[in-house]
Image (cartoon, rainbow, N blue to C red):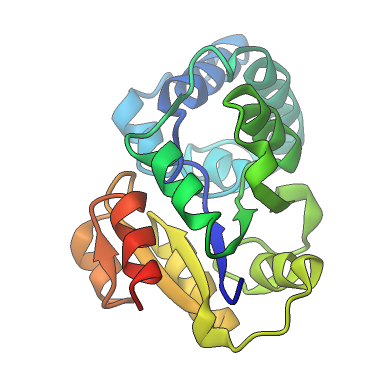
Length: 214
């Protein structure tokens, strides 16, 4: 297999908006913070929890506490309130026939693994790099480099692909000098993605077929 394909999670493989929103809402309610609507939260999905709480006005000294409360609730409800996005199962099965697959996400690797197991697709992925596995998250190159180090397949960078739905994913690909591919199944805008990559598709299946035919 002379290809490596790395996938983002939220907005690329899964729709976990409801689980994320419910978890933020519980933290906000429990700590007497102003509640946000779902669209306000969805705008920042893909960023780290720490940064999301900062965006939402949390005090720096409270962020660690809020993150722990969020994770405690999220892990309880994520399986029930998360769905695979359309075409994802087909895209993963197809990609697995010609590439080694990995996950690079700003979610925790623990919750990511649990979701993959719940959907019965964990067996397709050779590595999962989450928030707790790196010092610098996307758009830094570190998560991609860590995934590639784990896979340990010596191929040229033009055969390594990062598929994601936000500019964080495409900037990370650019910084790691691999091929960034944007999908419109999640939270990023088409034009902002197109500013970073010529390869923008409606969903992961279109993206995987494109790679297969290169």
